[in-house]
Amino acid sequence: MKRVKYIFLTGGVVSSLGKGIAASSIGLLLKSRGLRVTVQKFDPYINVDPGTMSPYQHGEVYVTEDGAETDLDLGHYERFLDMNMSRANNTTTGQVYYEVITRERRGDYLGATVQVVPHITDEIKRRMTELARTGNYDVVITEIGGTVGDIESLPFLEAMRQLMLKVGRENFLSIHLTYVPFIEAAGEVKTKPTQHSVKTLLEIGIQPDILIIRSHKGISSEIKEKIALFCNVQTNCVVSAKDVSTIYQVPLELASEGLDEIIIKKLHIRAKRPDLSKWRKLVKKILSPKSSVTVGICGKYNMVPDAYKSILEAFVHAGAENDVKVDIKWISAEAIEDGNNISKHFEGIDGLLVPYGFGERGSEGKIKAIKYVRDKKIPFFGICFGMQLAAIEFARNVLKIKDASSSEIKLTANNVIDLMEEQKGITEKGGTMRLGAYACTIKRGTKTYETYKSVNITERHRHRYEFNNRYRMAFEEAGMVFSGINPDKDLVEIIELPSHPWFIACQFHPELKSRATKAHPLFREFVRACKQHRKT
Image (cartoon, rainbow, N blue to C red; front, side):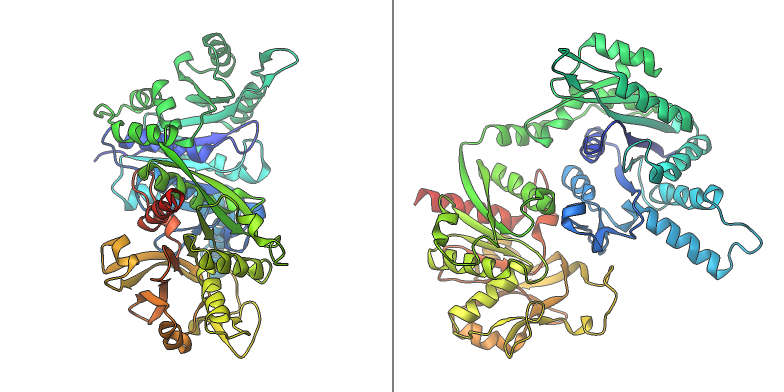
């Protein structure tokens, strides 16, 4: 029987070095060699999932096809590898402890004292190997969240050490991503933080096989030799990862360092030569666009761009397909709520996107923004809460229903957006929204149909509120077209205005299905409309 190979990626020195990008890049390089690869993320926080965490703390919540609320790094895995992840690709400390405590309450451990070792580490190992057991993969890449030395990640590292002994060193590879700072006053890079990080791993019982060294300008061969000597690795296994203009350059940089060749030799894998031609074309288009467009994003989490990570990446993909660079202009929803001199906030934009969000804060500003671009015939794209607010704006300013609102914001006589029927009895917050992929039927003859070129699609959702069908006839009589409907529950999925150059809003999250080499159709056509707006 063919043995599955395990690659573990840990991080040291500081957080935010880009382990998710490194894991995605390694996966892409191995996939380009014909190997069947998947990537999984182990997060040390005690939350069961990030669904109840603030975007200010965690960034966006990435939703998979099967409805799991996961870490945003799973978005990188999907975008780079062009494959769907599932709830099995993301594990948290909270999930592990929840499972073990449930078993203890059920009586599975009767007679035993339940401990971190072996009970917690055994459950972690079970999850580390689940994809290898249930999927048809040659390589499983596991990213351990946090930084080596953190208390909360210790059980994951101990489970990693135990798994290394179980599967054998020939089937196991440890890659450590670390950082070499440049001290400007001394005029040199310092390797000591990396040495200490590796020492911490060694104390746990893990010897890294490969070191990926993040730095501003790359590192010299002399620095590589020094790191190799003090960290007990081969010199050719010290891989430089300098700062680049776009994350999509990272796989090419790592390939130029020979990382994929090192990996397949160390794991004794037979693989074909890599084919990165499609990826190189993508990077060339990103780095050398023919022109540019400016898209305004009117949101409430603008201070934390990671809150809209998948949207920003979807614009990169759509820009590449349209041969343009998409520049983002951040527009604060709260800043335009007073309605004074609103036009100054929209100067220079070629299109407006109103993204998802929760609650009342900033909602009136977003409604004013939508009215502005609807009146001025500027391309508009609404996502989730953005679609709901577009419906409210239309009801107030076209249908003249002045108290039109959402029951999430304010209870009125005209809640054109209301709580979904199946959500009305729910009190728990975590994992209870409408989550994951649902079907949508597209109406022929609409801009949406021209975009998808298909009648039947599926898209991913994360919401509790929906368009109130009591108002559908009035909206249609006033010129709104419901171009996408869920066939199972007759829910409104997509709205559009035929009288507008490009005014489309959707209840789902199209950004979650955009891929690096295959932009989502709605983002692609929205950017095309912005490009046309700039021309005219």
